Image (cartoon, rainbow, N blue to C red; front, side):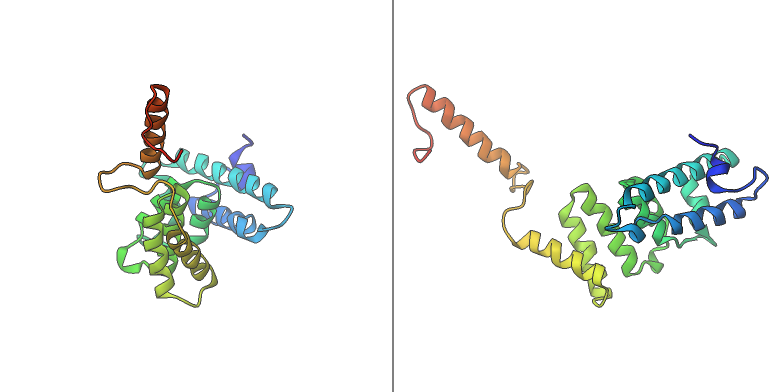
Length: 199
Protein backbone atom coordinates (compact mmCIF):
# COMPACT_ATOMS: atom_id res chain seq x y z
CA UNK A 1 0.00 0.00 0.00
CA UNK A 2 1.17 3.53 -0.78
CA UNK A 3 2.02 5.90 2.05
CA UNK A 4 -1.42 6.71 3.50
CA UNK A 5 -0.47 10.35 4.08
CA UNK A 6 0.47 10.62 0.41
CA UNK A 7 -2.83 9.03 -0.62
CA UNK A 8 -4.80 11.59 1.39
CA UNK A 9 -2.46 14.41 0.35
CA UNK A 10 -1.70 15.55 3.90
CA UNK A 11 1.61 16.02 5.73
CA UNK A 12 2.57 13.70 8.58
CA UNK A 13 2.11 16.65 10.93
CA UNK A 14 -1.57 17.02 9.94
CA UNK A 15 -4.13 17.23 12.72
CA UNK A 16 -7.06 14.82 12.93
CA UNK A 17 -9.35 17.58 11.68
CA UNK A 18 -7.12 18.14 8.64
CA UNK A 19 -7.00 14.39 7.99
CA UNK A 20 -10.80 14.13 8.25
CA UNK A 21 -11.27 17.11 5.93
CA UNK A 22 -8.90 15.60 3.33
CA UNK A 23 -10.66 12.25 3.59
CA UNK A 24 -14.12 13.76 3.16
CA UNK A 25 -13.01 15.77 0.14
CA UNK A 26 -11.59 12.66 -1.54
CA UNK A 27 -14.61 10.54 -0.56
CA UNK A 28 -16.85 13.12 -2.20
CA UNK A 29 -14.63 13.24 -5.29
CA UNK A 30 -14.50 9.46 -5.79
CA UNK A 31 -17.95 8.54 -4.47
CA UNK A 32 -19.33 5.67 -6.60
CA UNK A 33 -22.68 7.41 -7.10
CA UNK A 34 -20.93 10.03 -9.23
CA UNK A 35 -19.59 7.37 -11.60
CA UNK A 36 -22.70 5.22 -11.97
CA UNK A 37 -22.76 3.91 -15.54
CA UNK A 38 -19.43 5.57 -16.32
CA UNK A 39 -16.46 3.69 -17.80
CA UNK A 40 -14.48 5.17 -14.89
CA UNK A 41 -16.64 3.42 -12.26
CA UNK A 42 -14.08 0.65 -11.58
CA UNK A 43 -11.24 3.15 -11.30
CA UNK A 44 -13.28 5.32 -8.92
CA UNK A 45 -14.14 2.28 -6.77
CA UNK A 46 -10.47 1.30 -6.55
CA UNK A 47 -9.49 4.85 -5.68
CA UNK A 48 -12.21 5.05 -3.04
CA UNK A 49 -11.00 1.80 -1.51
CA UNK A 50 -7.43 3.11 -1.44
CA UNK A 51 -8.61 6.33 0.24
CA UNK A 52 -10.60 4.35 2.84
CA UNK A 53 -7.63 2.09 3.60
CA UNK A 54 -5.28 5.06 3.91
CA UNK A 55 -7.66 6.84 6.25
CA UNK A 56 -8.12 3.68 8.35
CA UNK A 57 -4.35 3.25 8.62
CA UNK A 58 -3.73 6.84 9.71
CA UNK A 59 -6.57 7.02 12.22
CA UNK A 60 -5.91 3.63 13.78
CA UNK A 61 -2.30 4.70 14.23
CA UNK A 62 -3.14 8.06 15.82
CA UNK A 63 -5.46 6.83 18.56
CA UNK A 64 -6.17 3.50 20.16
CA UNK A 65 -9.40 4.74 21.71
CA UNK A 66 -12.61 3.59 19.98
CA UNK A 67 -13.22 2.50 16.42
CA UNK A 68 -12.17 4.64 13.48
CA UNK A 69 -15.78 5.01 12.44
CA UNK A 70 -16.75 6.71 15.67
CA UNK A 71 -13.81 9.10 15.46
CA UNK A 72 -14.18 9.78 11.75
CA UNK A 73 -17.85 10.46 11.47
CA UNK A 74 -18.86 11.76 14.86
CA UNK A 75 -19.63 15.43 15.35
CA UNK A 76 -20.88 16.30 18.83
CA UNK A 77 -21.92 12.67 19.22
CA UNK A 78 -23.99 12.52 15.99
CA UNK A 79 -22.86 10.71 12.87
CA UNK A 80 -23.76 12.70 9.79
CA UNK A 81 -21.94 11.31 6.78
CA UNK A 82 -24.52 9.35 4.77
CA UNK A 83 -22.41 9.57 1.62
CA UNK A 84 -19.72 7.50 3.33
CA UNK A 85 -22.30 4.89 4.34
CA UNK A 86 -23.48 4.74 0.70
CA UNK A 87 -19.88 4.33 -0.39
CA UNK A 88 -19.30 1.49 2.08
CA UNK A 89 -22.48 -0.27 0.93
CA UNK A 90 -21.47 0.01 -2.74
CA UNK A 91 -18.03 -1.41 -1.89
CA UNK A 92 -19.58 -4.31 0.02
CA UNK A 93 -18.30 -3.06 3.38
CA UNK A 94 -21.65 -3.74 5.03
CA UNK A 95 -20.37 -4.21 8.59
CA UNK A 96 -18.70 -0.80 8.52
CA UNK A 97 -21.76 0.84 6.97
CA UNK A 98 -24.02 -0.63 9.65
CA UNK A 99 -21.59 0.33 12.39
CA UNK A 100 -21.86 3.96 11.34
CA UNK A 101 -25.66 3.79 11.10
CA UNK A 102 -26.04 2.13 14.50
CA UNK A 103 -24.06 4.91 16.18
CA UNK A 104 -26.63 7.46 15.05
CA UNK A 105 -29.01 8.87 17.63
CA UNK A 106 -32.34 6.99 17.26
CA UNK A 107 -34.23 10.29 17.55
CA UNK A 108 -32.32 11.66 14.53
CA UNK A 109 -32.98 8.72 12.21
CA UNK A 110 -34.60 10.06 9.07
CA UNK A 111 -35.74 8.52 5.78
CA UNK A 112 -32.14 8.30 4.51
CA UNK A 113 -31.13 6.32 7.60
CA UNK A 114 -33.92 3.78 7.01
CA UNK A 115 -33.11 3.59 3.30
CA UNK A 116 -29.42 2.87 3.98
CA UNK A 117 -30.28 0.35 6.69
CA UNK A 118 -32.53 -1.31 4.12
CA UNK A 119 -29.63 -1.35 1.65
CA UNK A 120 -27.44 -3.12 4.22
CA UNK A 121 -30.09 -5.77 4.84
CA UNK A 122 -30.76 -6.14 1.12
CA UNK A 123 -27.05 -6.70 0.42
CA UNK A 124 -27.04 -9.44 3.06
CA UNK A 125 -30.05 -11.08 1.39
CA UNK A 126 -32.38 -10.36 4.31
CA UNK A 127 -35.38 -9.34 2.20
CA UNK A 128 -37.98 -9.17 4.97
CA UNK A 129 -35.90 -6.79 7.07
CA UNK A 130 -34.91 -4.78 3.99
CA UNK A 131 -38.57 -4.46 3.00
CA UNK A 132 -39.44 -3.06 6.43
CA UNK A 133 -36.70 -0.42 6.24
CA UNK A 134 -37.41 0.52 2.61
CA UNK A 135 -41.12 0.84 3.40
CA UNK A 136 -40.36 3.17 6.30
CA UNK A 137 -38.03 5.30 4.17
CA UNK A 138 -40.60 5.50 1.36
CA UNK A 139 -43.43 6.38 3.75
CA UNK A 140 -41.31 9.13 5.31
CA UNK A 141 -40.39 10.61 1.92
CA UNK A 142 -42.45 9.18 -0.98
CA UNK A 143 -41.11 11.79 -3.42
CA UNK A 144 -37.54 10.47 -3.28
CA UNK A 145 -36.86 8.45 -6.46
CA UNK A 146 -34.32 6.10 -4.79
CA UNK A 147 -36.67 5.25 -1.94
CA UNK A 148 -39.60 4.70 -4.29
CA UNK A 149 -37.58 2.52 -6.65
CA UNK A 150 -36.25 0.22 -3.92
CA UNK A 151 -39.62 0.04 -2.15
CA UNK A 152 -41.43 -0.94 -5.36
CA UNK A 153 -38.67 -3.32 -6.43
CA UNK A 154 -38.60 -5.27 -3.19
CA UNK A 155 -42.40 -5.20 -2.90
CA UNK A 156 -42.59 -6.80 -6.35
CA UNK A 157 -40.04 -9.42 -5.31
CA UNK A 158 -42.18 -10.27 -2.28
CA UNK A 159 -45.49 -10.47 -4.14
CA UNK A 160 -44.30 -11.58 -7.57
CA UNK A 161 -43.86 -15.25 -6.81
CA UNK A 162 -41.86 -17.71 -4.83
CA UNK A 163 -39.00 -16.31 -2.78
CA UNK A 164 -35.86 -18.40 -2.58
CA UNK A 165 -34.97 -19.26 0.97
CA UNK A 166 -38.50 -18.76 2.35
CA UNK A 167 -39.06 -20.76 5.49
CA UNK A 168 -41.95 -23.03 6.41
CA UNK A 169 -43.48 -23.03 9.90
CA UNK A 170 -41.06 -25.64 11.17
CA UNK A 171 -38.09 -23.51 10.15
CA UNK A 172 -37.18 -25.68 7.16
CA UNK A 173 -36.25 -24.05 3.87
CA UNK A 174 -38.95 -24.67 1.21
CA UNK A 175 -36.28 -25.60 -1.36
CA UNK A 176 -34.88 -28.20 1.03
CA UNK A 177 -38.31 -29.82 1.38
CA UNK A 178 -38.67 -30.15 -2.40
CA UNK A 179 -35.14 -31.48 -2.78
CA UNK A 180 -35.75 -34.00 0.00
CA UNK A 181 -38.94 -35.25 -1.64
CA UNK A 182 -37.24 -35.62 -5.02
CA UNK A 183 -34.36 -37.56 -3.46
CA UNK A 184 -36.81 -39.82 -1.60
CA UNK A 185 -38.70 -40.42 -4.86
CA UNK A 186 -35.46 -41.40 -6.63
CA UNK A 187 -34.60 -43.85 -3.84
CA UNK A 188 -38.10 -45.37 -3.96
CA UNK A 189 -37.90 -45.77 -7.75
CA UNK A 190 -34.53 -47.52 -7.44
CA UNK A 191 -36.19 -50.08 -5.16
CA UNK A 192 -39.24 -50.53 -7.40
CA UNK A 193 -41.59 -48.09 -5.67
CA UNK A 194 -42.78 -44.64 -6.59
CA UNK A 195 -43.27 -41.90 -3.99
CA UNK A 196 -44.24 -39.19 -6.51
CA UNK A 197 -46.09 -40.79 -9.46
CA UNK A 198 -46.00 -37.69 -11.67
CA UNK A 199 -42.19 -37.58 -11.97
